[in-house]
Length: 273
Ligand code: BTN
Image 1 (cartoon, rainbow, N blue to C red):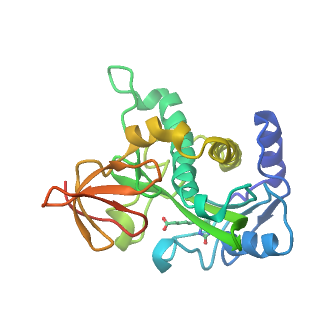
Image 2 (cartoon, rainbow, N blue to C red; image 1 turned 90 degrees about the vertical axis):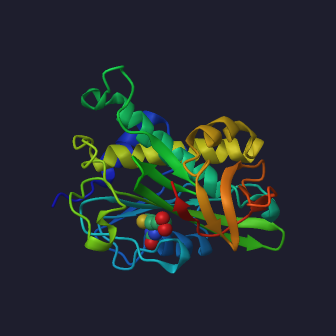
């Protein structure tokens, strides 16, 4: 197993001019990089402090699930953000972080000549499953866990944790029908260090754009990447057909009664399509 090389990530970060990734901590193994980032934030870590590990023993996903985190294969990365935002505006940052990760994957797929369809476009489509699962060809390639710490009406810090499946070629049986990796998609020549730096750059750019303009600058990409659109879903007790994402980042669901309902949070089950 080749260990993650902190120096190579730093070199790539400075080449890209990334706004996140300083300071940078790379562990051989940790319980959860989100926990590392959260403790560091509580102790005063600045905007941009990033935590990576080659393996996680208690990698966490949304909804209390665990995140498959075997050693040396994938990226487990968490970063501390300190946006100047009122607490009431921070929630949609989770969507924007998903878009940032999706954009890195989309660029990588597009630049891999071997993956071109005869017409010239990429073979596999990158999509965002609300709120922030990154899917390629309908399978989950990356998951994002956003945890905000609030102080009264303001945001003290936001921890953004990204799990990106890079080299895994075989998932445990419970994941094998739903998960994918860059290697399984035919991209096995990009070092994890380069991907880590690209993720940090994209997350930093997206966080700055969100702080300046909230969701408005992302509206087009959100609509283009929306994997749930027109699928039958159930979420937070609401059943119907997914009908897009509104300006607040809520999932719109049209019920059988024709009424459009906006869902702020919840795990979506796709019931058909
Ligand atoms: C999900 O899709 O449920 C979110 C998965 C988030 C996984 C990442 S891996 C790095 C960071 N550390 C964690 O414990 N979780 C996130």
